Each structure stands twice: as structure tokens, then as C-alpha cells.
Length: 496
Image (cartoon, rainbow, N blue to C red; front, top):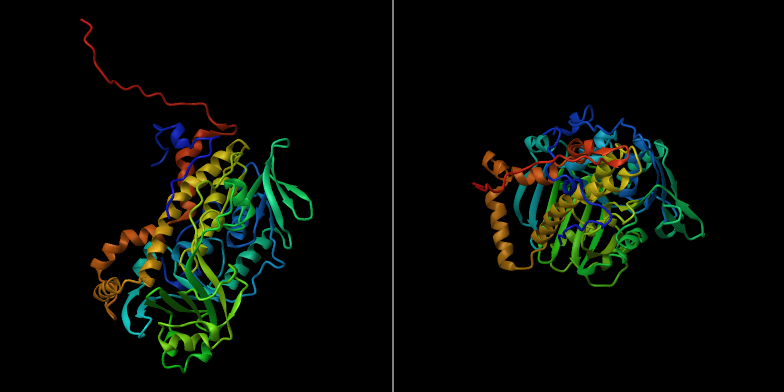
């Protein structure tokens, strides 16, 4: 669901303050990407003139990514995580679209040993396992996007970011349960109250503790509990060796292809990870039992109800004893990501929770961090902090709304419950993406705008463009009291 961002009452955006201001300035192959990224992140070596003490609540992908970009520009970062250990134990696959991989390459992360490239997406019916059509990720599409489309194990992506943060000097403390955060009026700083009755202060507190976390509640007044969708999410990882002789699964573990089975309120997808040595599968199925919303819940695969699915789906899941299981919860985008003091802000799922099972979950978290870090790399005074945090939300909100709408449309596309619409969908896929033919130039041109919107977005360039246009109006004491006066003739009166 899209929402219109509301601006905290203590500030206005620069575009509101200076409506007439004229701005100062108006993909490669996977193996090639290891040598040199297409894009360069200009914030990589920039040190902020004013360096903050930053406290991040939550050591998920958003928290780690935020810590990386803030530390690179000289800010001092601590992360408090309530889990007993940061690196997750569960096994699950994750997709890395081009808008994410180009950021990770810019950070110097080597993905080739852990990821598998995706070259084709195949669509099939979940009831009969019948091919419908395919989409081919051709080189020209990846060049346009500036990155690669990769698949990898979530734990390995997480570990890469975790170790990167530690190498930069980020302090990560587990078993730290934060009870509340608030702005301390007397000290004029944000503070976090921990369960051990210790209160920690900082110049900036970032909430990366999820939609039901304490930071979101401190800004909005209530947690984002959402509502159950009526579907459950299951995920497994199976060694490729177990599948190579299988008549249905052998063909999917030897090539970098991504099969997607579509059905009535059902969607199943699978893709190789770990350089084709493993296959991960995700299933979106109708809810049959109540379960907690957590990634630590393991459910026996022999108790999953695969009614409506081809037997090969159940056979795949039975190759493991348990699956990661959690209900699918629908939530809205938070309207305000920054508190009224301009010192507490939200990143990632805390601000804009997206359902599991999509291509952009990890990407949105890292994009948030990249935009926020890019803006704060220009920080030279405390007075600038509220305005830069407001700019962060202004930049990210349209992007997040677009991606949420696209991904929810994809969910509806794959789980369509109207039989007539299913047939129309399948006919459209077959006619526009015929098996073996890929995309023609005409098809590519027709879809180029959509590809650019979702996959060609560049987070660090977004932040730099904002600073190029508006940064000159922020001095070392906040917004300059300087205006461009423009006089316009609205009426001519004859006084004779």
C-alpha cells in the first residue's frame, strides 16, 4: 500500500524553502564484475567534516549496511542486537538484483565464490508442472542495470556484511535488549534505555529493529503489527547432489536458471546458490496452522500441506526434514521515518516492511543505508542533521513506494486465484516470452522503462544528485538565510 509521506512539523524540505532555486548542475557479465565495477561510489573515501556518534538498534542487513557506510565516512558506530548471536543459524536463499549487486561490488565485496548468476526465469503451472514461458536476462539488460542478478545463501550475504562492518571498526554487541529510545530534552541528545537499566546516548539513533521494534514505536507511537495474509512462507536448501538424478529437479541444479511455479493462492520458486552446489526453494502456501512470525521456527516438511501442487514440489521439500516457516504478514509503509528532534530515524524494514519472497527485500535495506550514508558524508554541523534526515526520507519514499507496488503486483501475478485471469496471464507469458526465443528488440524497448525503474536505480548517485542540487544552500550553520528574489509582472495598469 502506498502512502503519502508527511513532513515532521519542525522543518521543511529545501525544495519548499527554495522553490525557485536553480540547481547548480543539471552491466556487465558476472565474471567481468570481479575486476572493476561499472559505477563508482563517490562517498567511498569522503570523510564527513562533523563525525557523529551513531547508535544502531538491530544488526540485520539494514543495520549492518548502515554501519558500513557511516563508518566509511568517519562516523563512529555501535550496534545493539537483542539476539544472542548476530549471524543467523537458519538456512535460506536470497536474491540479489542488479540494483543491489552494484552497491556490494562498490564496497569491495567478492560475491563470486558464494553466488550463482541468474540467466533465465522460467514460468510453470504449479498444478501440472507445465512450462508456460521464460524471461531471459540478456547482457544488454544487465548492462543497462549496471549490475548482475545473483542468487546466494542469506547467511553468506549476512556474514559478508557482518565481517565488513567489523573490519571497519564497528562495535556490535549482542544480548542487548533495548526497551525504548527517546530524545532527551535536558541533554539535547537521543538516548536508548537498555534492559540492564543502562542508558546510552548518541548524536544519532537509527532503528533497524524491524516493523514491530521499539524505534518505530518511538517515532509513530505504535508498532506496525500488520495483518495476516492467509498465507505461510516455507524455505529449504537441498544439496545439488541429491537432485542430479531426479527426473524433475536434475535440470534445475546444473544451470543458473530460476523456475517459478504459479497457482491458485500458491507460488513456489527455486534457484541454485553456492555456485550451483545447492538449490534453495521458497513456497507461498495457504495457511493451515497458526505460527509465530519468526525466522527461527523450523517446521517438519512432512506436515506441510501441498494440496494443489505437482508431486515434484512435495518430493523436493521432503529431501530435508525441516523448513524455515513463518506466516506472511501485510504491513504498510511508515509515514514518518524521522522523529521531531531530527536525531532518530528508521532504516530498512522498520520504515517500509515488505513481504518475504520478493526480489527486493535485501536491496531496499542496503539502498536505504547507501542514501543515508551518502548524505551524512557531507555533514559539517549539527544543524544540518535534521535536514539531511528529511532529505533521506524524501529521496527514499518514492523509490520504496514504486518497489512495493511492483513486488506486490508480482505476488498477485504468481498467486492469482481467478482461473480466467490465470489463463490470460499464461497466454500473455507464452506469447510475449516464447520458450527458446528470449526477447526481441521490440520487447526489450517496451520493457526498458520498467527495467530502469526497478533495477537501474543507483542509491549513491541519488544522494549525490540531491547534494549537487541543494547542498550549496546548507552552510556550516544549517540553512543559509539567502534567497533569490524573482519579480514577475502579473498585471499592467494604465494610470493615464
